[in-house]
Length: 423
Image (cartoon, rainbow, N blue to C red; front, side, top):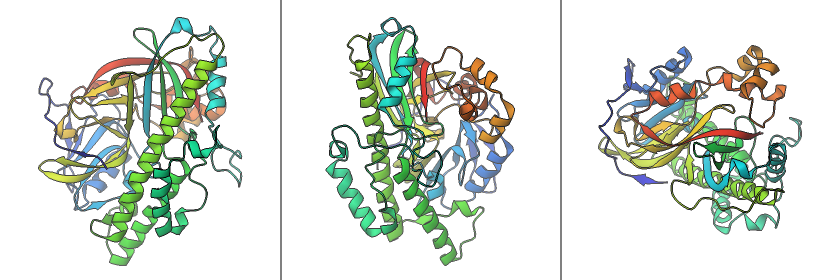
């Protein structure tokens, strides 16, 4: 767990949040100019009723209904954590690195690059949704021992020995794999025509298993203690109990696993690019502003409003003063490398993307394949019916989302996708 102190707020911008009435603590939302579904507000009010929420709930402009807590919410708590607010893709987040390549160094047709990335990073499903489906995975070149570190393995053994149902399946098997849904690997160009690699993924099957396990444990705790909740998905674990300590331990491990997974994938993508015919040798990263990594689905121990608290960011990025983060758009829109302004009202946070404006089912009902092809024109990506739910029109306008949080972050680099690989 990371420990941070309060950050000083940059007063060069007036605050942009709006306060919503709530039966519990206040709800402060950065949502001016972006749509917010009624269900999300209902869900936020239920979260605000929890007695251990500290100060207020902060809402980012990409807010939308989630399971348990609302996606795009920041929830500071004292003495308890809500496992379903963290969710099952523990440690989901982003990584981006700038290369020394420009668009002129890339082949005219980008299909070969997309194919190389798809071969380098397993993605999607392994059994097309069948009974043996566990997400694409493979043993990485050189053997699992090269990526499944002793430190990760030793920590996982301690956790799985205490909670045996977590131990099924090798946790190493999905390292270096993307998963499905809205996870992606992209090649982007910045405003100076430089090539970036950007990717989005989390803790894969083991994170899902861990999150689901402790969500159920929290529900049983509420039943045992006869605790009445605004929503059963807001079941919590209380600090000072063995179960709470075990969850925090597993949570920290899954967050580290997710970060390591992204590092392995990034290495694989860069290696694939270097092996692609016609692309000259290049370098990547090299400074803080050209290699960025961040979680956006996690818990951190921080100091806010005069107290040490557990901050759950459910679809939100840490944006302390001077800290770098990544806010991706949809697969046909812009993305941003940002620098935090350390706004204390948002608990030093910003959005984690554009945010969905409709469900996956609604998107599939609303848009045609031709709609999707037009929306992703100029991007080398999948243009089949199975990615309609990820089409750009299913997401909020990223420019409006950025405008709504201009007091939370400043833009360092603006990126535009040219290749997108989705699971």
